Image (cartoon, rainbow, N blue to C red; front, top):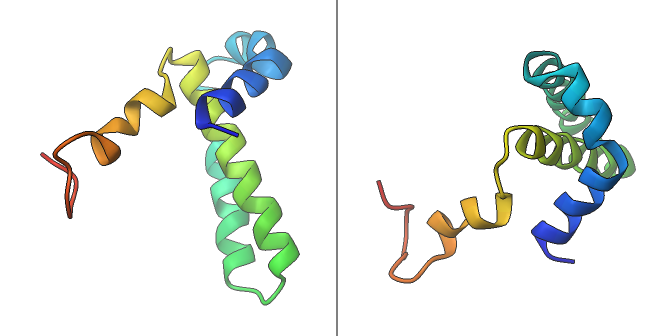
Length: 89
C-alpha cells in the first residue's frame, strides 16, 4: 500500500469527524499516541510497539488530511531526484 492510499483510507473513515474536532485538538490526540509509542519502545512488547507505530502513523495521516497536506508528495523531499544522503535544506 502506498502512503497516499493509506491516507485516503484514513480520510474516508475519519476526516469528517476530525475536521470538526479541529487541528489543535487532533494534534493533542497525536501527541498522546506518540507518548504511547514512547512507552512501547521502552518495553519488550513487540506487538504493542507495532500497534503504537500504526496508531501514530494513522493520526499523522489525520493531521495531514485536515491540514490539506498530501503526505506522499511531502515525502518527496526525501525521495525526489537528486536527493542523496541527508535531506536537502
